[in-house]
Every structure is written in C-alpha cells, then in structure tokens.
Length: 46
Image 1: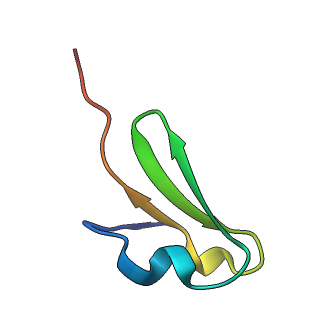
Image 2 (image 1 turned 90 degrees about the vertical axis):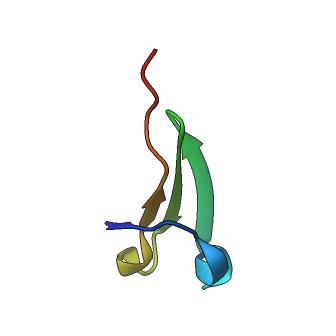
C-alpha cells in the first residue's frame, strides 16, 4: 500500500474506487485493481 501526502486524482482513478476513513486515516481502496490502494494520515496519540 502506498503512503501519500495528498490523494489528488487517486480518488477518481476508476469507478470501483472507494474512499474510506478508518481510525483517523483515509484509505483509497480498489477491489478491481488492488495496486491503487493508498493510505493518508496518521493516528494521533492522546
């Protein structure tokens, strides 16, 4: 999975792309083409 500083056009790369927020991180998932997976953000402590 790629770690990016910004998502840009990754969100709209294909029709099967989903943008999901989990535990303070934003993930871009693509079931048809798993190479498009991207993670952005970090988990804050405190």
